[in-house]
Image (cartoon, rainbow, N blue to C red; front, side, top):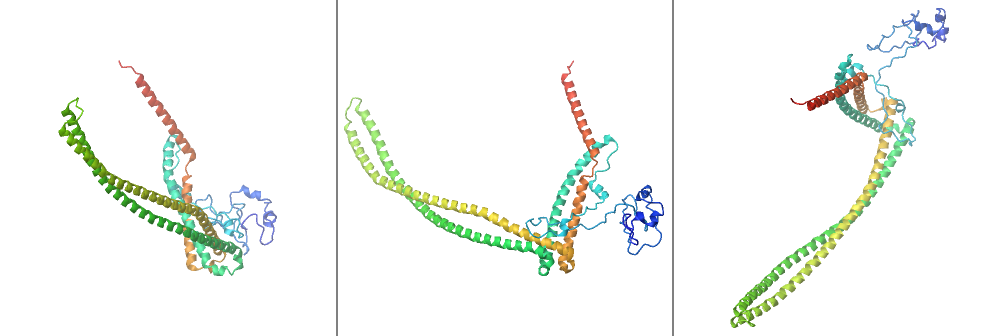
Length: 456
């Protein structure tokens, strides 16, 4: 029998009641526990329906498997190596969906079989020393190796995530290729419901997003046209301002020349008055005749120059008024353009928030659709592998093998990180800390001794 707790396939009796046991004096199974030998050899040929199941021999186990025909009393079965089971999709379908998850996603995947020697080689920590004074070297080796292992583990985890996405993509491709057949099968009715619902939701949300995009484009187009018209007016107003400023500069130059003639006559008149006052003496009331005629001529010329400045001054004032009016018009148009741009920015901000939510809804619906396809793909792989397209099935197999390899590599690195001797590392770190404290104390004592010594 495969197990000591099974009933006899011939007579249907429990082993304790079987004649081959009761007649031998072993009334209970506790008697077998006193022997290291696997058990007595049964006589006769086993029944055809009774199959003896042996686990594969492993050189790293404590004992080899028992020979054929021997009982293994209450021995736990050895795990059989198996390919990694299908993991559930990275983003499972929401719990609100009516479809139940596939059977493979309800069972946790079996533990990976990792060779401890591979882990030790990968860790490269070396054996833990038996002498406590060598533990600091071991601790330093472990700490230095951990940095490299953590870096490699991060890379391996990213590779696992990428391989998982690729595997899920291949499962979705399988479901897409077999969809015409799946839709006719009642077995997949519950799995098709979330797929149809996700597709309908994605279509509705995409239609709403497209409609909102059209409305936004229309609003923004209207504001952009207003901004373009206002900018053309700004350019025209700027040209008017530039022309008015050039005209003002020309008239200002004419006025400056006229004012310069006035100032020159004024200066000459003051100089002549000083000369006349000096020539007449301090008590003179009138200027000498030769200066009087000159002063009168200069005074007449000054009046003429001042009269000549009136026309340039008037022209300059008019040009200045035109410049200020043009600049005011330009400033008004600039404010209009800034207001239109602010309105456009407000529309963009409002739409950006709304579009972000709508896009997120579309992406969520697409993600639900993908997860539904993945669930169908898992069911197809489990139950209908023969109806799948060979090329897509081969692509899925390659993706599954790649995921298994990446997962195994990450698990090796994870176990390698944790394969150090924790006690030896703690002891080594403690010794290093004590040595550091002692070294600091010795250095402090030497400094104090050198500082307190008195030269003779």
